[in-house]
Image 1 (cartoon, one colour):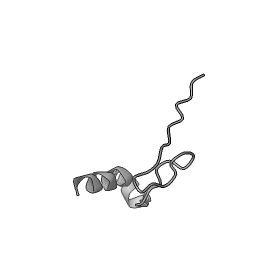
Image 2 (cartoon, helix red, strand yellow; image 1 turned 90 degrees about the horizontal axis):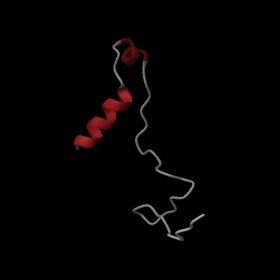
Image 3 (spheres, rainbow, N blue to C red; image 1 turned 30 degrees about the vertical axis):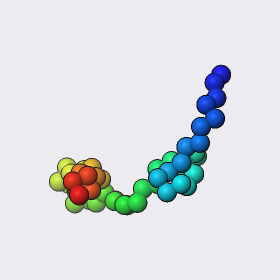
Image 4 (cartoon, helix red, strand yellow; image 1 turned 60 degrees about the vertical axis):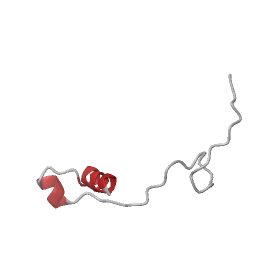
Length: 51
């Protein structure tokens, strides 16, 4: 067993352990997107990555 003892925090200094990365943009799939065989969640992530 090993233990680093390091403190892991988010960029704003808040606790990361047991919380992880909290999504700040919520995207839901729609029937229209499913019918068009689109991945709306992935498309939204690509748009945000380009900004």
